[in-house]
Length: 330
Image (cartoon, rainbow, N blue to C red; front, side, top):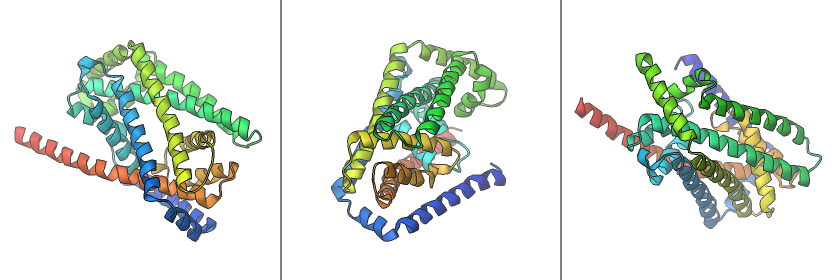
């Protein structure tokens, strides 16, 4: 990775941190700290447990795309998903992304490389399609609860564009756009050079085989949808822990709109600053004080950090052991 390509994400991260700092100062650092201090240990446990339950669901959704003969246990998929999310969010300057490392983790666990990559691509697709349904549900709730919101038009336009992209993503994987899709596939597979073409043919065959398993794809998408609504449940628990009493539908709407907004900031590592600003904006639509909305965003980052740190430490230990085995074998 060149120095210039490293400078861009670093600059965006610093800008995001400046936004967070500015929001905390503007809405009152004392109020934000008091809101965070009011959260009990059981509130933190419940909020974290909701995220872990969602992680288990995400692992199950990935496992549904692997036929039994392709190996890959439920717990291996959960672990691969944990590594994927943790590295993707907290190691934004790495040359390889979370998708690459998630596929690598399950391939080291016994899943064939082509099956690991194909299932990763299928999992990305089913999760994205489920997210569109989730955002659509949130948009419907927003239309009902806040019919004059200025967010309705831009989110509706963004959702329509995303649906078109989702259709294109499926077409690309089913064969009509394989040339456009091959670069992403090969990057996840980590294949370059002379063997790339042969490996891509194997990967395409694995993708075609996966897409014949319609019932598995349907179950994977359905489980992903439940997980998306699980994020809304986690927000409901988080707001309750902060002493804010909103309905579950309100929390689902906030979470759905949050992800719609954060999708626009995909190029910012960890969506630093974007998440905080979005929470503040969305909370205001439901009468939630900005210091509380900002506190939930910070609580969310603390929760993700508590989960990601052990995952990254264990993963690094596994990589070190694998490197040692490869050196001894060589």
